[in-house]
Amino acid sequence: MEINFSTMKNMLSNELVYIIIGNGTKNQFRDLRKIKGVLNKILKGIPLNSNILYFGDNPDKKNPDIGYIFQLISEVRKDIKIYMIQIKAAKEWGMPKFVDCVYWHNDYTDECKWGGVINGKPCSNSKQWLKLHKSIKNGITKVFILGGGKITLDEYNHLIKKNNIDCEYFPVERKYKGDGITKVTDKDTIKDKVGITLHKIK
Image (cartoon, rainbow, N blue to C red; front, side):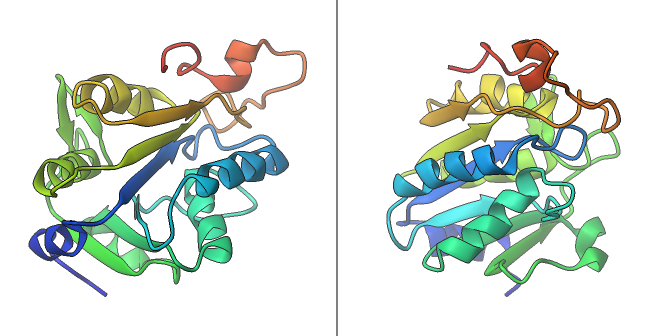
């Protein structure tokens, strides 16, 4: 179902709302067995009939990044509603079957198309979830962070931490070293395996 921001705010006003962010396309996840273990731990802490925000990352098992997490959630927790926030330019790609509601927006620039923080201010999808946090009664309940790159670290420092949003960080290993090409190996350091968020998110 397509909704606008006002409808999304009203639907989630008195609800438990969670966010899961982390490794994107250029990092991905190295070991799906470990990721499923982390996800099981996360889901044990999310009550029945909760809601999770999803930002349109492709749920691809062959190239598993944060988008695939939502595919897994939809398979094991049918009670959780998934709200997708995404730019209208991506509308032609459609949306995964596991999405319950989608909010398409035009609030982005070429400099910040998908989300993140520029000059300390959130933009695109990041701006939308922060606006929602400030608009609903109890705000975002908790953010779970699975590794991640620059956008994840910026969201933590400028949005999550500054707005005192509860969060939990998991230093999961990535498949690539942030370029989508160079694979992480067993010989690499833990810093190379996890990426720039290691020791920088508490």
